[in-house]
Amino acid sequence: MEYRQHCKCQSEKGTGQDTHAYVHDLRLASTSGFAEYDLPMALPRTERLTPERWAVAALILGAREGLAAINMERVAAELGVTKGSAYHHFSSRAALLDSALELWKKRATQDLIDQLNDLASPHERLAAILGASIGRDPRDGLEYYILTSQDPIATPVIDAVTTARLRFLEEIYRDFGLDEHRSRLWARSCYSTYLGLQVLRHTLPTDAQVGTGTSADITEMVQQLTPPATDSAS
Image (cartoon, rainbow, N blue to C red; front, side, top):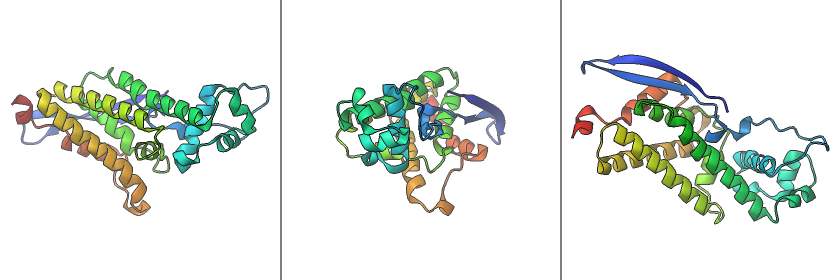
């Protein structure tokens, strides 16, 4: 996974303090960038299809058409093979979908958190999360389709991802100096904003899209979701 970070500092007028506006270009498969996987329409018969490759193909399909589109035949077509090949690894459509969702959980949450923990500043971590969110191609609907899915197979994965993400956000706000209660409130507000962005990117007309992933967009959003110094000190 490619991880590129750009950082710039700005002086906030009237506060006498320097604030850091961190702009991150996170081209991470873990943040719903599965559409960046370059899967050919047909694979050489000598190339072995691993369970993970099937799961990735399922997620690419899901990013385009939603989880309901994922089945043995459609994913096989994505890989350019017959659906019988899927049964070498998965007993059913449910098993394939579960494998795909577990892969998404790992890359979209576990791996991402591990990488963001390398960033010392809570400003950096917050900007990275928001930058990865609003900088995506709006055609990549994987995150939206999964988080809004009513499929019972997806429910436990969504619950686990939501819990882990909120816990991580709470840690970020604790690093801003907030107590446990306020950290929990700010984390939920931040994650609600994140979820709202996913919905807006798939419901607003293209010419009305908000948040293009520019430096100004990310800086503004981080400022809005950063607790004021007085709140942090209380």
